[in-house]
Image (cartoon, rainbow, N blue to C red; front, side):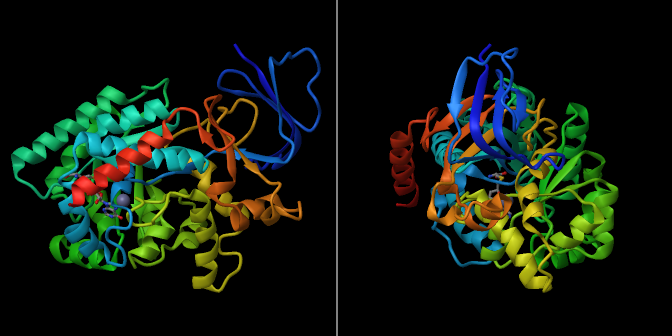
Length: 431
Ligand SMILES: N[C@@H](CCSC[C@H]1O[C@@H](n2cnc3c(=O)[nH]cnc32)[C@H](O)[C@@H]1O)C(=O)O
Ligand SMILES: [Zn+2]
């Protein structure tokens, strides 16, 4: 067992009991065993000593909604509303994706995410074996799910369901426990009710949570009402989706009563401010969700609707847009935005030991180089993280106690090969 000690570091812990520690953090194989302003005494020997001077350490960021392989379509369908973007730009091209396209598109996203300080992410896509292999190789954590669109003949629906079940069974708990799985009907507007019910049943049988898109646009909500007589929240509740632990992406258009329903069922909401702004979907009622006690976290959605996977940007957007919309500067304060991007994200995907720095927690943490103009003066580091930092400031990344980024370089992935393959595959797909 290797024991590592970081000395002279500044630690933003996202732990209310000791939010800022200046000094020492030690970890063994995968767990934080020491965190204090004081140097540990010699009774706990450390094998490796790292210097944390000019570094700010914080928990790894958790991205709770993504479709990683869609990085191959970054910049391909900008400035369109969701339905047009999906139907005219994304779906026709995604239909051409092979497993290898998904592998390299996903690796491109994972490369971007880990270099930018994201240590865990949710991915909803297909060709998920390739996605899981990419996660395993990278050393990061993934909560993965074969998303399924049900606008297809019954035999194809059945095939997608079986694929989702098989994937979830094959990969849950794999990669030393870094991979977990969920069941995902894509959205109420792309899945007939009986198809959704089959996914819920499978989630019950496999004891897995659910993930879906919900109430993303006003158009979706009104169409759902027209077609089923119910808005998406009641519709999904009726189909039993919330009888499983659930994470829903977007939840932009909600009534007070729907917020109450989400709270009653303990539904987790992934807020995707960048994607919602870009697709002109609207602004989610995050301050109201938080006030009601709903667990809210942050997601980038894919880099085809964002167009990067920088979680610092999502924290900043979350902190800013709700002030702008409400006129209340305290709508989402910096401390809250930081929680949305870290501890709330971890809880949202049922990771109990990830998301804060404290003894007993997993050693999933990142370091930022704070010896830069935009981090001076050395005053309020929570403010600096939310309002000044970006993915580019990340120098080191550890997941489960293993270093996967050092000095800004990915240690587990071949960056040049990934960039070459991604470009080549985009050209082949779109020519
Ligand atoms: N191709 C699969 C479905 C994959 S799930 C991921 C899907 O989510 C789509 N997607 C990406 N971002 C969004 C969003 O913001 N809202 C709704 N769908 C999205 C994406 O284009 C992709 O088709 C099937 O045929 O069953
Ligand atoms: Zn999505």
